[in-house]
Length: 299
Ligand SMILES: O=C(O)[C@H](O)[C@@H](O)[C@H](O)[C@H](O)CO
Ligand SMILES: [Zn+2]
Image 1 (tube, rainbow, N blue to C red):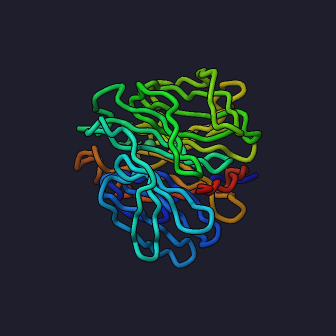
Image 2 (image 1 turned 120 degrees about the vertical axis):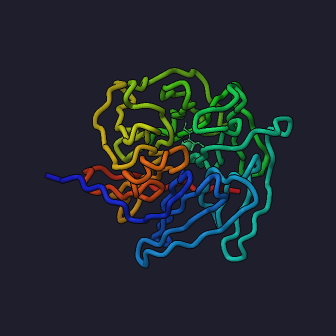
């Protein structure tokens, strides 16, 4: 019998922590604080955090084949050199939409960096609707656009056989699936596989586990829900002591631990007093399921 343990391992006071990614080579968790324009790297052994500050909101980070990282900064896909703290733009999207920025992003099993955009928020989940699009940066640095009319482009991952792409547009309150062609990176046949219940609030970041099941962080819901994408059933709910849970990934030894990010922005002083760990990094152990390593960007 495994017993689930949920603990805050880092009190980072992120305004909006997001995009947790495990880097096995350094035993570290990478994540971003979007409005603070920071990419952070928490060493799970030394418990120290390093950070790189960039010049625009940074909404996701990913590993890069051959070393270093890639990140979505403002409306740019960028390469990030940790040593000299420099970023180099690889491509820019939404040039005609000055109020847009990237949001969540993740690399597909073939090494393409997928990320979507949204209009900048005036308050959490308050924004001009339908301004976002979903894109991917191919290894040769060209960008493909999949669709527009997105509200808040969020969680994404791929099935273990690479034949399905899972995607969340937060304000649809739905987890969607597409058929996925790994060779071409094309998506088709969009359908909903899970509609959130009212108390689950807003679906945000997401990851897949080694059994092919999904874990979805629920913003304002203070939880991560465990979904079976084949039956559309919720299998489990993990409740956290913070309400603005934003994303999750597996990491640690053999990817047996789950890491969860969360936000502080949008909380009033009373809530912040009651949730002193808001904006921190949570580790969940004893889930009895493992994750899979993140794919590195191949360009
Ligand atoms: O992290 C994100 O995905 C958005 O940038 C955040 O602002 C919130 O999560 C969003 O408001 C919830 O819908
Ligand atoms: Zn998000």
